[in-house]
Length: 100
Image (cartoon, rainbow, N blue to C red; front, side, top):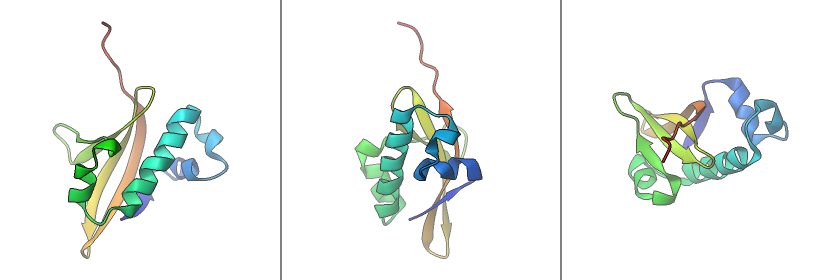
């Protein structure tokens, strides 16, 4: 699969300038790993079957969430162009968790 970034600033996650994105180091490291896994996937079904990826459909939208550590998630759209799948990273967002 191909990876694209809706925000060019997010593309810095995969470069040496990742600190400019201002995300926690653990989130950047995990995002890099997940992007590598997504690149290796031949199709959407494979992505859904890899439980370690943490891919979850986002309710009411065509987007998916990829769970990252420290209560963060990568929001992606998965599109098909000429029988080739493309993952578009739209945003990184902090997930709010309820108190116990």
